[in-house]
Image (cartoon, rainbow, N blue to C red; front, side, top):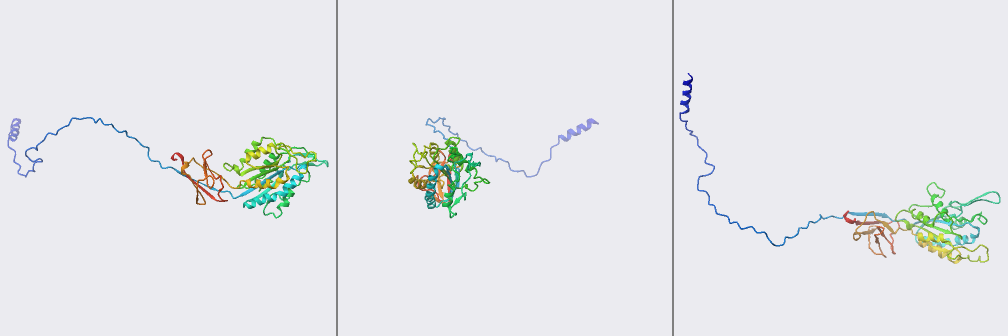
Length: 371
C-alpha cells in the first residue's frame, strides 16, 4: 500500500505545471548594448613646491565693557573749628583774632560758602584754684554762649568774641597746651548725641584753625593727627580737611607791643607747622598784629569746599574716558577741564575749573582689558 502512494506522488511531480497567462511587467533594465566607456586620463600627482602661507588664528572680537561712575559734587559747606590757647598771656592775641574774623567770614560769603563754626580751648588741665574750687579744662567741648555760630546768628561777631574769653585764665596753671588732642576730642564730641553734636556736617569741608603762643604738647606725632584728619571725609576727599595755625615761626618771635613784658616771647611751634604742611593749610606768625587779617583771608581762600578728586571704580582705558557735568561735556584739559591721574586711578579737576556746588559729575570709560 505504501508503495502505491509513493508511486502516485512521483507521477504527480512529473506532470508539467500549468502555464501563467497573466501579463508580465517590463524588465527593470531594458535589453540593449552597454554604453561606450572611454578611458579617463590620470595625470601624475605632483606636490606644489610654492610657499605655503601661514594660517593666523585671531582672537574673537571683544567689545570693551563700559563703566559709568556718577558723583554728586559737595554743597560748598564748611565747618570751622577754632582751637585757641586760653593762657592769660594770649589775651591780646585773642582780641586781635576776634577783630579779624569778620574778614575771614567775608571771604567765605563772597565764595557763596555756607559756614558754621565753634570754639574750644587747648586746655585739658585739671587743677585746684586758690578759692578751693577745681579748674576743669574745656576737654574739647565748645565754648561760649552760642556753641555753634552761623550766618543766621545776627550777633555772631560778638558771640565769637565771647567764645574767646575765659573767666579763668591759665596764668599759674600747668603750661601744657594740647591743641591736637583738644581738636580730636572736639571732633569726637560732635558725633550724634555728643556735646558738640551738629558742628560737623557729613557733606561739608572741615577747617581747623589753631592759635597758640606755645607748641602743641599732645601725646602722639603730628603725622598721627594728620592721618586722623584725612580719614574724616573718606577716600578721595582727604583735601576737604585742612589744619591752619597762628603760632611761633622758626626762630620764635615777640608779639607786637609786648617787647618789655616778661615771658611774652613766643617759641617756635614746629609741631603746628608740620601738621599745617601735612594737610595743606596755612601758617602765619602770631606775633605780627598786621598779619592777622591777611592770614585769616588766606586761610579762608585755602579751604577746599568743593571736591576736585573723583576716584574711578575700575581701571579704565585712559583714551576712552569722557566726563560731563550736569550732562554737559567737559574737555580733557589740565587748566580748564579734567585730567586722569593713573597713579591713584582718579579723574581730577586741578586747574581753574571745578564742578559747581551740587553738580552731577558723570564719568564714562571702557574698562581696561575689555572687562
